[in-house]
Image (tube, rainbow, N blue to C red; front, side, top):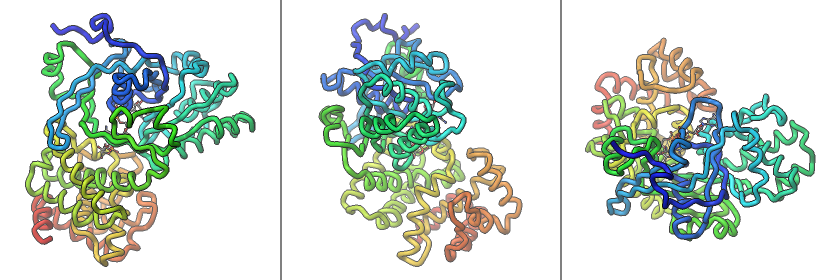
Length: 472
Ligand SMILES: NC(=O)c1ccc[n+]([C@@H]2O[C@H](COP(=O)([O-])OP(=O)(O)OC[C@H]3O[C@@H](n4cnc5c(N)ncnc54)[C@H](O)[C@@H]3O)[C@@H](O)[C@H]2O)c1
Ligand SMILES: O=P(O)(O)OC[C@@H](O)[C@@H](O)[C@H](O)[C@H](O)CO
């Protein structure tokens, strides 16, 4: 019988005062931001904890209170050819507030002068405006609504503002969040002086996060608990690689000394190149490998990378179709691409293709389609591998494919298109709601996709892929 993870069982673990508020209590943030606070705390550089806010009134969420807000982060993988296998009890979470049952506690955070940072990860869906949110019927439904209420309380108390660093994977996340907060400030008639305070006393930083966090290690939890010597329902597995790019002022390096603690964190004036590099060279190959891999019966990124044909596909995709289309120094791109391949090869992490497959249409649109179009403009032809993957994606969204997971609207568009097999590519590409434009206007794309679809259906994903990598 293993013991539970609690402060009573581990009385020597340190406590830190609250210096940060975080909207979202998901796996990613617990293995990313909280893990980094822990690294700073161990070196005496931050000496602070974060208070987590449950952003939605849905499900129980992690009952971290049952473990006194302690949990384990397991870092596993290969980094610069070195095997990393670290385990650490994280002590940088002070408590979790559920604003749906503890709204007063939530607003009371505004009174604490030691709180100076706010972070968030509420998924891509979280930074959204909800017209039904009001100041006086809290808790507001949306994350920006809750944040506006908290900021307004802080303003009313005459206190200094916050440094706000959202981590949602949407472009210009800090700007979008500020825009919605300002929108609520207008809608709720919070006054010009609040808007001025919002603008002058608070900083909304755009940021880009990068770390693969598959979450709770279901496949080896029992074995790990035996090894750790305690039961932990909220342990999180993550890879060793980490990058956090924050668009913010120079002084942030001192106030939040992440880089000083040896962490791969860049405070910069312009994060665009980092975003382009990550979205196209890491998320792009992920998005491209998934429909082909799933159609071939593969289940994980590791299976893709240990399969000679599929790993050659990934390599050629990066080398021939992605890197030449990106406007960054090629040395930097190559070194990032090589780190990405090392990360994809991580044998310790089970990264399910189905989890990457979720909402793949919008992912293909932002991560691969712009590069495909650039390639076509420059070379006058469609890139073989991305086009094959695009066709595999259309096939994977056919109604009989059980792994597809997307919004009901997107699935309905595909069901309608697949009702006539002869015009499926034409019908899907012409739908501007999916792509933001009518893709049938791009010369030769429909024909190319139709040919790829036919081949995928006749010979299957593996043979079609092997044919492509053989001819390149
Ligand atoms: N896991 C990774 O490898 C990884 C890496 C980088 C970025 N991300 C991004 O981080 C996000 C969270 O991933 P995770 O692995 O922590 O997932 P998770 O399911 O563990 O956590 C999701 C969090 O988002 C909140 N949330 C979900 N929908 C919301 C909504 N509509 N409004 C407000 N809050 C909402 C949940 O309450 C929870 O706090 C994802 O969007 C993912 O793209 C994940
Ligand atoms: O998180 P998603 O679902 O938007 O995309 C799937 C993966 O590409 C993604 O999670 C990466 O592993 C992550 O972005 C690495 O930082």
